[in-house]
Structures are given as structure tokens and as C-alpha cells.
Length: 579
Image 1 (cartoon, one colour):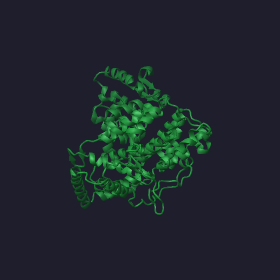
Image 2: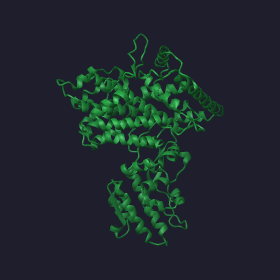
Image 3: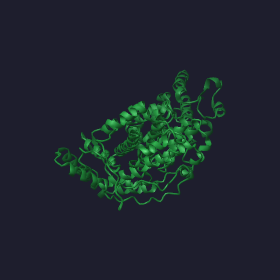
Image 4: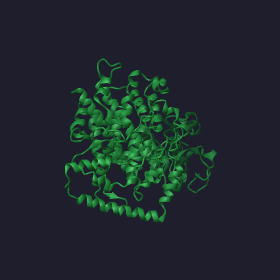
């Protein structure tokens, strides 16, 4: 019997499992980086056993490895037999039918499930090729079993695993990090984008920069708390401690250094009303006489960190991302989006009449896209501005307050002025703030050059990520293929910038009203502006005939458009301060 341990595996128990001599049958590694070397040794040793009885011997090895790998990593990716070879290459020698017996994989029950380690029962393992049953105490191993949870409350795990988990970028994430968190699992539906996202996030959080690593995680905690995103708060609280952060800071904002506390005004503006940011806000932080002064290099990194966290919180809420296995035991970190609502909405969508209506909606959208592509731009500049203002000030029904539980202390302790939230541009009786014209200040012509001067590597990574998400297409739409979706993608991007007050003089905003149905606009505005109010009903109400991967695509566009909009307002204020 071979035993393999990873990370926090209990070595004494593994030594008891391993056959004599223990030195030949026991392997341990601190992380997954050396797993391939151990796998090769196992392949050599197991194959030497010959055909006689090798089936049982190798299967026991694989069982131990699977249990220990999953226990340590908590990786949701390890749910299906076909992902075990990704974590542990030696599993390729296993028979696929047996792997399906090792892991009781029932697709109909995995929609809201994640897997954790639980003692096996006699129905899971066979003692030999002849099919004799192994009793749990004889096997001495653990295998994954379903528990109520999963990567997303909205997206079936089958689709995530089928479309995203086998991608090369997912394998790289598993092997380098030892796990793939729920955000990566959802983004894995679009591997080209995920590659850019992981590269950017790694540079932002791990590579050299003006801010200490622990400070970076703490700033993300503060930013995530603005949108009540306990998922990110919990994740970066752990990362903060691992980076050597002072545990006392996690007691709340008041326990952080004054220099970080002074970021709160900029943090709340970036999260909810970035168009209010002025050069005076920048001056208060960086001027030579300021208390606990920020350098421009430090501030630009902090701005990117906060904007990254705000937009990522939109993705978490918009895709219904659920807590990680290690978070799910904490009742304060349970997702606010009720699972029951998502199930009932899905069941309702299966109604035959509504299904037919959804098919018709796709056909109608296709016709509108073709019509928009054939239209000539024959409108005056005044008419273009009028159409923009109509979209910006449209009185969409604000989502009713979701009956969430009281905001847990682990989040509220990091929030100052919690009543400061997104506000429409033109509330009654209040004059709307001026519009930012893209021709006056854009990412391509202005924002990128400033960031390239102050934070060069990040400017390049962000620019690549913006370009990738804007160009991302598979030329498909619902059940149709060979479709040019450029007009639809541009309408979504420009609509998000529109509700953030950014206008493109050469864009006809009438296209937004033609291509984006009301339910989609309500969803987009909610996820972009107050994501904590997103509900399953909103997610399942728009594009009812579309694949979940296409809805994730919408969330990627939304996340990046929101990120760019916030950065533009902050960078414009910095530009005005420095000139």
C-alpha cells in the first residue's frame, strides 16, 4: 500500500497506511509543485508489481492520492474522475470505469454541490479486478462525496466542468496553486480571458511594487467590504495573514494604520460614484504636507487594487459564486442569494410556453442585430447626445431590497459610511454631474499613458485584458453559430460606461435600447452599480435560451467595463493634479 501526503496531510496516519518498508511506500510533498516527480516514482514502483494483482495495488495508491489531494487542496475541480489526472498525472494509468466507481458522480445531484472528504463505504471500492468488495476499514482511505454547495448558485457544475475544467489554463492553475477557486472555475468557461486575468492578478498581488504584499490584501479587503462581498473579504483576510500582516488590523478599519484609513473616501467613491473624484481628493493623499502621505506610485497601485476588488465583487455576485469549502462552515459567510429562488426560477424557465418565447426572443435579437449592422449613421450630434442622455437617465425599476441576513461583522467592521451607495445620475431635483466624453479622456489616449508612466507593467497587463475581453467571441449565440456578435458586445460595454457617465460621441445609443432587453439592462445595472442586490431571478430572467457560459461572458464584459470606467475617473483626477 502506497501513501501520498500533500501540505497539511497527517503524516503519522499516512505512515500507518503505507506498507513496509515505509520509506519505499510513503511520499510527502509540501505543495503540488513536486507531484509529478512523486507520480513518476509511483508509476515505476507500481508497474514493477506485474499484472498479477497490480490492479488492486495501483487502485489503492490512487485512492489514497485522490483523498489526500482533495483533503489538502479543497479543489472543486477534483469532483470528476477526469480531473484527477490533471492533479496527479499517474492517474492516467487508471481505468476510467473504476474511477467512476471511486467517485460517485451523479450529474443530477451536483448542481449545488461541492465535494469534501468522507469515509468510503463498501459500494465505492472494489478489492480486485474480479470485483470483490473492500470494506472501508480494509481500504483505509477517504474519497470525495457530495455536500450541499458548489462554485455557483446559478451555473450547473456540469457545464463548468465540461466546458472549462479541461482547458490547459485550468490545469496550470491547479498545478501551480494546488487548487482552483470558485472564481477561476467560473472564468474557466473562457480560458483566453482567464489567462489574462490570472496574469494580471498575480502581478498585482505578488510581484514587486511600492506597497507591501500584506497591505495589498488589506486594501482589497476594504474594497470588497464596500459591496458586502464576504467571499473576497474572507479569502484576502487569510492571504493577508499568510503575507505576514498584523492580525490586529483584521479587527476592523479603526485598527489599521492612519495611512490606510485615509483611503476610505477614495475607496467609497471608486466603489459607488467614481465621477465625483476630483484632483482635490488626490491632493489630500499625496501633497507633501499631508499626514501619512502617499506617493503617486503607491496611490496608483492602491487605486488599481480597489478598482480590481470592486469589479471582481460584481463578478462574484453576478455569477452567484458560493463560498469555498473552507469558508462554508462559517454561517456568517453563507451566500446571500437564496438557492431556492434560483431553483424555482430555473424550473419556471422550463415551462414549455416560456421556452418557446425564449426561442423567439433569440430569433428577434438576431434580426435586430442584423438590422443595426446595416443601419447607416445619419444622426446629428445633438440627436446622439439626446439618445445618450435617454439611456443614462432611464428610470429602470430599482431592484427591491433583497432580504439578506444582517451583514456579518467580518464585513461590516471594514466599512465606513455604509449608507453611501450608488446614486443615479439624475435623481429628481438634483442636477446631473457633467458627462465624461471619451474623446476628452479615454483609456487608449490618456489613461494608459499615465499608468504606463507610473505603473508600467500593470498598464500593459490591463490593456491586454481590456482588449481580450472586448474581442472575445466564439461566433455563436444560443443555438446559432457563425454569428457576428460585435454589435451586441459593444452595446453591453457602452451601456455600462453610459450608466457611469462616459459618452462616446461617435456611438448611436439607440442601439443599446434596440439590442438590450429590459431584463438584461436591469441585471447589468444591478451587478455593475449595486451588485450585492443581485438575485437569482435577475440572472435567470434575461437571455433564457442562452448558455450559462454566455451569461458569464456578459459578466466579464461588465466587470472590465466597470473597472475601466473607475480607473478613468481616478486617472483623470491624477492627471489634473500633476498638471
